[in-house]
Length: 133
Image 1 (cartoon, helix red, strand yellow):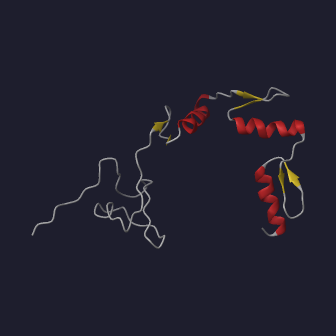
Image 2 (cartoon, rainbow, N blue to C red):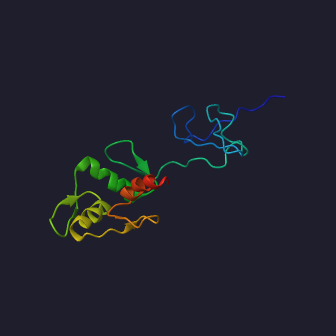
Image 3 (tube, rainbow, N blue to C red):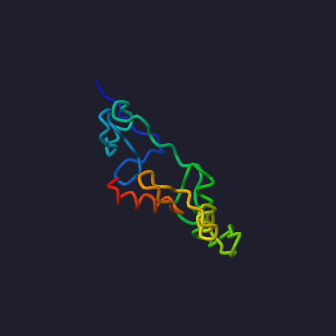
């Protein structure tokens, strides 16, 4: 009996460095390097659909149009968000908000161990190492 060759759909890239994910039932990485493994439901819980939105300047892509537009500002230099206090401009709204805490003194990120407060979440995460967390 002859066996038919099974090939993946056109949008599945086969080989290394292709961002495709395959996980076995034990959580280990599967192998998508051979064309016969892409369809095996035991080896692969999910497979990647083609990205919907692409950057106009580089290969970056995302399912989120917002993320792509935000990324494109790294190419265009656009900085549409300005500080309410000093008019410094930012490419991302979250960076503006974080910067404005310099002016307001707001410290919304508090250490649950000692109560010390921080303006940015990453500073709190770094501080937690002092407590061994």
